[in-house]
Length: 113
Length: 113
Image (cartoon, rainbow over all chains, first blue to last red; front, side, top):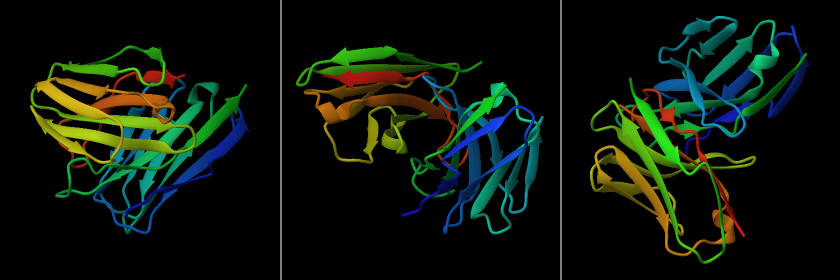
C-alpha cells in the first residue's frame, strides 16, 4: 500500500516568516499534486509536478519534486494570513487504477498577523 | 468553463435514515467522478469512483453506495445511516484518473445523530 506522510501536521507562524512543509513516501509516484483546503470547503489544486527534480513557483510558493519522485516539499516565503489552510499532497501513478490518487493527511498551517 | 455543484452543504440526519447526496459537473463530457470522505486527522478517503455511466468502483466496503445515472451526475446513497457515517463528503472530477488535477466540490457536512 502506498502512503504519503506529511510533516509537520500543524504549523503556527507569524506573518512574514518562511516555512517548508514536506510530503514523503517510500514509493515512487508518476506525479504529485499539492492542494490547499480552507475550512468548510473542498481542496483546490495548487500545482502538479511530474519530473524528478522539478521545481515550480507560484508567486511566494515554491514546490519541488524529489529526484527519485518519492517526496516533495512546499516552501512559502513571507507567509501571509491568507496562506492559512490545510495543505494536502497527493500522488498518482499512470497506468494504474483510475481511482488511485493517494492523499496525505495534510499540514494545517496558521499564519497570524 | 467547468464547474462542479454539490448539495446540500450541511445535513443532520438521524441514525437509520436514508441518505442521498448529489453532485453534478458542468462544462465537460465523460469526466471521471469521485466521492471522498474526510474525517478529522484522517485525510481524504476515497469511497467510490466512476469512469463512465453505470460504472462504479468501490474502494472501501461500507454502508454506502454510489450511482452514476447520467454522464455528469454522481449520487452517494445509504439506506440506513450509522453514527460512523458522519463526516465531510467531497465530490470531485478529473479528465483522467492518472495524475491530472482533481476539481472538488464545496463538500457536504453530514452529522448523523
